[in-house]
Length: 299
Length: 314
Image (cartoon, rainbow over all chains, first blue to last red):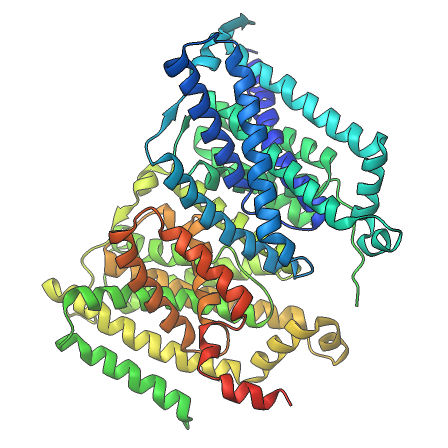
């Protein structure tokens, strides 16, 4: 019984983290048809800027500890927007219309560049920013102890998911965006400024990635290589749910999160195995993902 | 069997390079061993690229090759280099035959993602299996050849072996690219539906190409295991596969020797870059990759045949 509860709670914490990481990736793919390998780097950049800013707040300034939560989010928003817009303007803007698979390779090049850029800016020593994490303390229920920060992550993740859904489905801009997702050419013909849409979408996607990194930073040691690890997990989640669908990413995150939690508690040696097995299994049975639309082949 | 000019040239370079074992310094032969072994894996990527498929998981077969060589020595008591390499090819081919059934249904990014997922599954299994040394992997030693024990000259032996295998594989792959299967592959890249209309089976062609690519890549993995004396799960990690895609694009798919040349260039530059600019090495790779995609979409090899291409365009 305790194990079941632990699996459920751990699973939902992990699932909400996965959703945070995957949301930006799926938004970018849905609108722009770019499978963005550099998403892991946005995550890393968010984590590093949050970790260094919060670290400075606690050791350099010594200000009110609760302001650090604002700093976490602020660091992510600024770094994500800046890096996202720079990348879009300097590189991707010149590449639109190329093959999807070529875009994968282009963003792979971008990942290689950003990975080292992170090392050059922040060095290779790990950053620790445990203060926001430990500040919230722990709570016990059902005989198990959980960090409240982790549970808060579930709330944040839900909020982000719901607001993304609302923006897409209930606002004017969201409708335009869905038109672009549905058929780019017709949207252009109808006078939708697709170029601006792309720039905004990419910036938002990058910011979501950075936000995921910033919110994770207090719980981990921020060190080189975190982006490379994260990107394949995000791939798995997005592929399971169906690329480009927010609801799909949420379902994928829950499925992968719970499966992993089950593996961790029942058969720890299978932890990595199950994540990618779920991905391969879903791809094998439903290549468009659980929630993806079937695409008609254009000849 | 008549050899055409390219094939003679390939075999001759193989022999010359192998004879280099008497003159070249040890560090250089080692560097070339690794480069050619990687080149073999890249051949596997390139063969699929000719058909328009980009595998982001060729590290799977690289790793299977390496681990088969290692485990063959450790658990089966097989130490003969030729038997071990044959075993790795068989192991890779068997896995590819199963996975290929599924993979040949996918194109473009789905193929890339699924190959990536499969190699990550192997990584996940190996990283957690303690009897195989978890993430540390284990050592490969005591390689023999047809009853002869090279002992201290083991590294030199592996170098000569790699040169030989690389040359023979290159000749074979050259023949393949000039065979009907090779031409169908190129046609699939251009327009798969038309190939179907013409009565050829893209699925079968891609399947056999996939299995073949796996076997060739496993050779590269096996030789790497013998040369470095060590295998670890990192061989199946997706960044390793990304490196192979990089080298493949660097060389281009225009010529069968391109992957070997590109791999040598890659290994040489990396050796120096890691020494002098350890934290910007990947950044250099990234910019080079962007440069290739923008300016030389057919790879470095296209630099040498500019003139001929210009004529053909008319």
